[in-house]
Structure formats: C-alpha cells, structure tokens
Length: 346
Image 1: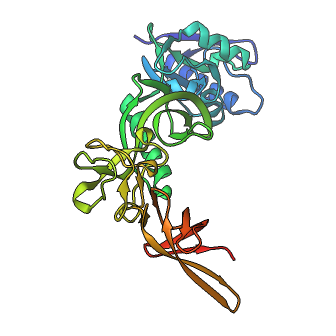
Image 2 (image 1 turned 180 degrees about the vertical axis):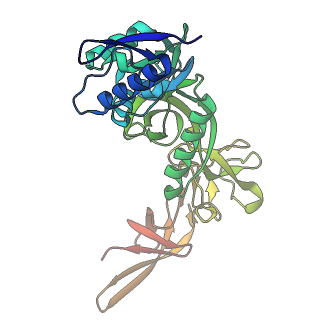
C-alpha cells in the first residue's frame, strides 16, 4: 500500500508526495544537517561510546578506574580514553572484594562532566571488583632468613647449623614485585636464638615488617678427652680427639689446637668427653725437690756457675724457684731454664 503526504507549493497550491520520495528527501536533509559544523546532535541519536562492565574484575592498585573493570569502545577515541581513566573509587584491601553498581558509575561520569547521553553503560547486577594479592608462605620467609644467615656467616669463615627458624603464618600483600630485607639485632653474636627483622617490599613501597626467630649453632672444633684422665697425667694423642661443638656451650678458654696440649699434663682429673681448657693442663715440671742443678749468673763479659739444690716441690720452664747453693748453703731465687739449669739475675 502506498501512502501519501501533502506538501504546499510556492504558489500556495497543494501537491501529493509519495512515501518513497518523502523518505529520500528527509534522509538528505538529515545527513547534510548533521554534517554541518556546530549543528546540535539530534536528541534521538545513538550513543557514541559503549561501556561493558565485567561481572568479575581484578585490580592491582589503590584506585579503581573504569578501564580496569570494563571494555570501553566507540568511534570517539578521545572520549574512550577519558572514560577509561575515570576513577570509580578506592580498591578493596588485598584479597578482598567490593561491589560496583550502575548508580555509582553514573555519578562518577557526571562528576567528570561526561555527557551521559553519549555513553551506553552496561553494568551487571552483581559486578564485583577484587584486589589482587601476593601470598607469602611461612616457608618463603624461612628460606629468606636462612639464605641471609648463610651469606652473613661465610665471610667470618665459620661453620653453622640452623636448627630451626620460627615463623608460622602466611603473609598477604598487594600484587607486585616482592623483595625482602633482613636485619639482625645490633651487636649480637651468631649463636643461640636470634630475632631477625624481615622488611617486605612490594615494588619500592615497604608493605610489612615481621620478625622471625632463628636458632643457630656456630660450630667450632675443640679437643675433648676420649677417656678419663687422672691428675698429673701426661697427655698423648690416644687420650684426646677433635669434635665440632656449638660455641654457645663452650667456655671461652676451650682448646682447639693439638699443639697447645701434646707434651703437657693434666693439672687435675678430667672426665671422659670433657672439653679441655687452658686451666686444666700445664707443662710437666722440669725440676723437682732435691734435684741438683747448675746455677748460672751471666753479665757482659762475665759468667759464673755454681751447683745448687732445688728446695721446692717442682718447677716448670720459666718459673722462679728457690735453690740452695751447695757450698754456701744460702738460698737464692732462680728461673728454670731446663731440667739441669737455673738462671739468676746478675
């Protein structure tokens, strides 16, 4: 069926226009009108940008931007870029979520002076935004602390054994590049239970500081008795052996060099497995009471000798002992040189 439309001519007469001619005329008028600069956009025109908000989104920064949670498309590239950068609100805490509704987005568009008539906004009923998260396990913290201890001890040329690192919780951080910095207590020996501060960074930002306790043994070689040793017993290689022990359990004067022990004797009884100390051993005496020794007196260009008798129970190299001159029967103090000689100051 063909429809008709009345049109008035210049002389006031009416004429009939067919529907097809009327449609073509209307199309060209609309086309050229919209193409003219400064011509207002018709109210019934379709939006130029489409915003499709995702039902589930993840963000990894403090602010939520529209471009983080939606697909923004359209022919107006400037408007697309502007919409993508609009901040919708604060991000939730790491691992947490928050809902975003259409009213919230519409409000932010108006606050940014966006002509909402040019935007087709599609928002699901349950749009949810989750903050990305990095989960740091307790095993990771333990490995970080262990690696730090080993690096710190190597320059000291010590052997260590880490018995335990106490840290028993998972750490939740914002998503990003995670680095660690371990700090030991000030002026603390590497021995026993040590609290260590672990600073955790995401990017350049310090996110968290935690404490781990490391139970550390620093091992040192020491000499122990293989069997019980009686008092004044001369020590041989068969009597002792070298073992590694935690310095935390060792006395400060524990002996570690065989050269400091062999050729000496026990000063008192020593139990089996006991760590030998400097106060437990001594040089055997070179002279004892009743021994006849040469008493030597020397000075520049002069040397005098005499025979004497040791008047003390015993004397070791370097000790000053009482000696009686055999001829004069007078006592004099002299320093033990060896088993046959003592020296007096002259």
